[in-house]
Amino acid sequence: MSVIRLNEIPRKLNELRAVFCLGQRAIPFLEDVFTFLEEISPLMDEINASLRESTDKMPHARSQLESVTQATELATNEIMDLIDVLQAMTQEARADAEARLHDVEALRQADVRLQALLNDHLDDPDEALLDALDAHLSERQATYEALETHLHAQVDSFKRTRDSLNQILMSLQVQDITSQQIAAVNHLIENIRTRMYELTTRLNDRLSFEDTDFALAEVEAPSTFDPNARYDHSPDRQAQADDIIASFQTSGGGPASQDEIDQLFTGGDGLSGERASQDDIDKLFGGA
Image (cartoon, rainbow, N blue to C red):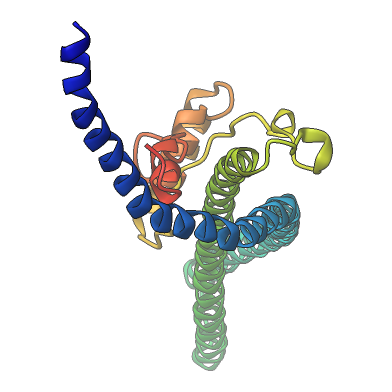
């Protein structure tokens, strides 16, 4: 048994020599690895600091975007209020012009009846008097026609003004589109912020919610928005609005449904309410 063990000594020595040779070859590689880790450590610290700085700035970016949305909404509401006033004034002026048209027509018919009565009841009419009366009535008829032409032009002008104001109102849907796009951007920023916080936590285990202004608990509840909302200046928008208002006026029911409003401003079945995909954020940061 001892002979066998003595015979194994050379083999064991050879194996030990191979281990030392491998160690001699591995030591330079390990030294390079350690050197690389020493060099990359400051870089990782810079990345960590950069991520934390970017994460801290994101709430301010969201706040600025929300301020833009609020300012746009306020300005849009003021414009719409002014347009409502102008529409009311235009409608009142148009109604007054149409009433004047009826008055002119009534005067014309009264002159026609007066001329007929004079012709029928004068036993021995003076030709000169009749000629003067006809000339006077003809002049009045010409005046009536001029007034009617002017009033018709005013009515048409008021109608075009109303249509233009309605088009402005429809064009203001750009504010709704802008709000939805900003809401989508805010949601994307919040997702990126969450992802960056997770990365920062992995890079620095000492980082906690108390170390930064960022806190997941502060994330607002998801809002409904359409990230693919686009401005559409199609004339069908006004037709849809007219149909909704007409159906409301004829039915005498309550206010228009939310689905009808969504269809008016999206041209589809309403707002999709889809949130930006978390998978897209993960891919952006190289996650699984």
